Amino acid sequence: MKQYYLASLLCGLSSLTAFADKQPNVIVIFADDLGYGDLGCYGATKVKTPNIDELATNGKRFIDAHSASAVCTPSRYALITGQYPSKAQGGKGIWGPSAITSHLLIPQDTFTVADAFKLKNYKTACIGKWHLGFKNGTNDWLEPLSPGPNDLGFDYYFGMPVVNSAPPYVYVENDKLIGSVASDPLNYLGRNAVDSTPMPKLPHEAGQRSNNAFNGADKAHQLFIEEEIAPTFTEKAISWIEDNKENPFFLYLATTHIHHPFTPAPKFKGSSEIGLYGDFIQELDWMVGEIVTALEEKGLSDNTLIIFTSDNGGMFNAGGQIAFDKGHFQNGNLLGFKFGVWEGGHRVPFIAKWPGKIPPNTTSHQLVSNIDFLATFAAVIGEKLSPEQQKDSINILPALLGSPEKQIRDHLLIAPNKKQNLAIRKGKWMFIDAKGGGGWNRPRGHTFSGPPAIAHIGRENSDLKNGKIIKNTPPAQLYNLEADVTQKQNIYNENPEIVKEMRQLLNTYKKKK
Image 1 (cartoon, rainbow, N blue to C red):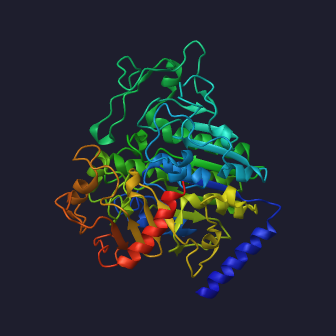
Image 2 (image 1 turned 135 degrees about the vertical axis):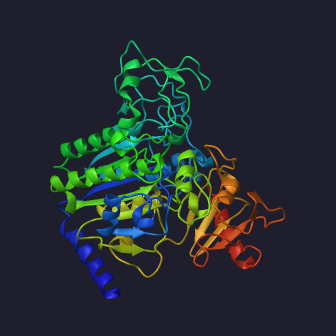
Image 3 (image 1 turned 180 degrees about the vertical axis):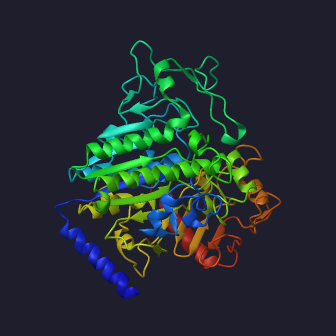
């Protein structure tokens, strides 16, 4: 087996050299809130994900992959910049979802993953959810929406400016609203707006979305139809691929699936066994299938690296709760949910397919993260980065092409919603220098989370009882993930030397902002 992987790695490296004059295309499909247990190839039985499973069959599935943050906005910051989000904004960090009026959170002079591709004359696009702000200072939403994605190395942007559960409910193309009319600008009314443009009512199962908080831009609002988000993004992606098929290209396709509200197209409603939550997963799978088919039809499949992953773990929202009641475990057997630093908040599906380069139907135990895309893609296209450009990103190409015996990553910093629960992973050890998971902690409802939700689904942890943190538990947490990936036992008290070592490593990041 070792000989096979060595041969595969050498073959892959040889192929990269041989095709130096025919640079590979790269596509990242970045799902939203898709949990570790939400796909068939990761153990789900109540949903059908044949297209994503096919990526794993024809490529490699990683079982120890993580988002750099358990929250959407900082996770996207990490992917695009290759830098830990705790270092953002001069050390202030990015911890939670960006506000509706947020400025562009990535400075224009930042070297990004798209910039790396531009060094090799690639065409670059971001299609889908942005959620990293626009403009300098407070975003007033008046056109042009600049600086934005086009100022960070992306030739083209089309998508949802924030998220499908928050306004403005419009599409943006480059720096303009789709349907924009100069005489009818988009007008932000404030969070408690009463005269905003209404949105269609949704069933409880679909999950909540925020009040629109905008009026004006009537045409732009009319063109935004929630049940058409998936086909709209898919058609835009395929059209862009068609327009750029003669050039090497990088496509960052950031879906809103499966973030609430769950609004699948009519043909997907009722298609799964677990309600709208599962229907939305199956619509996401359809999107992936359409992209793969388009590549095959255009003769691009063999020269395209596809990576599919998620921005963070699953959220136990209204739809997730219904899915659980029907026998679906969105984060598998992991502890915790989105926003928190327990494994369920950031351990995510991660699948890579590259015909002739990545061995098919293989599995990797390498510790990897979305923060590694920058360095890895630079290696794929043969671009050497300076330490300042590479930042915290690690080249994991050897793990894609082969099966290294040693871990490529020495350690990984993982951020939850609360900065005091910043955590460090090194080898089999996970250290959290605080009590709890650092995420939301809310009673049953749409935002059911934290220890109460953990108790509800029957997960166990030695620091928790009856949905609460036990009094006089250790001040911090240490887990041996090799023996206890479900994090049932906090072994902080039993391993003072390991705690000391891990805390010292973590503190280097707390001091270096």
